[in-house]
Image (tube, rainbow, N blue to C red; front, side, top):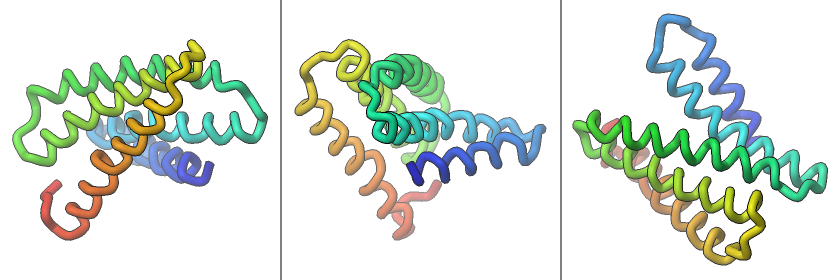
Length: 138
């Protein structure tokens, strides 16, 4: 829940800080896809909800992430931007798997858990460490 709240605050700051900066506004809007997901997961835990509503939201986010991935294909000029494009497709598939798991109640928990760990390591942790060590220029 804390990650969701923090990323929500950051997204709102990016969106409303400078109404003429479309890059920061879109970054904030894309961040909201993650923030709302995290906040909803926390709310589901707190309210003991079955997660079906979150599952349907994940379908919307999956489609949005796929569109962002397709849009970013033409725009990558650095290894970081290529990595970012691949991430959008990986996340789109992850959110789609949550749709199948939560909204449609498909028995795919083990596959979704494995793919979630894969995405956490290969789209977050490893690149984050490389960026922090100066190996990738953003």
